Length: 251
View 1 (tube, rainbow, N blue to C red):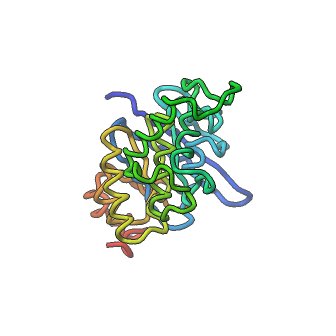
View 2: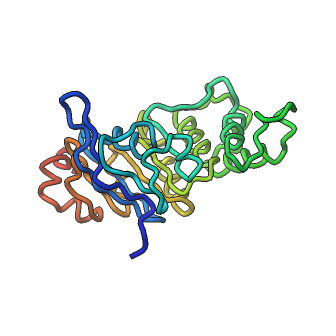
């Protein structure tokens, strides 16, 4: 068996008297969309924080591409190939869509960042060409000069994905990308994620079960900080324990 791209081993984290994560074992294989689902308060975002480096575990480890990254910071994990989105859109509202993505490109170690040189950033044609191409990839090519604050919520979601893609990740962590979107924007986001999955491995946290069952190759179910099931979408739908713990209200 080839080594998993993401391999989480016995991850635990306690906050005061609450076990937020309890000995979580979890893998993501290269090239798949692996969805993580569970009720509110199950620990999904806490888990993503530990995978991305925003939080450190009490015990256990996170391995990425064969490397132990447990003690690496968030920006160090970005540099080794992880990128993430957030439940609440995290873009620079006062900058154009193009400038948002250009900043993400500029932050890569291989980009020859202009932060290190006394020259206008806009002289860096290659940087902005790459930013424009990334906007095209998420369907925002025509909105390059629009301020991020003037984009629709769904477009801001897509912009955030473009900023993550600009770091050239191997693994994209998506934390509820459909949150706050209407039916049309959700449908466009699903299509976008399907397109992105041709090029990057995706760990998807999402409450929209229609989207999860359409997109996921595998699904893991987290309840009260414990991983109770992992399997194909069909197996997850049929598991009685999963239905009792979560899916009963969603199917």
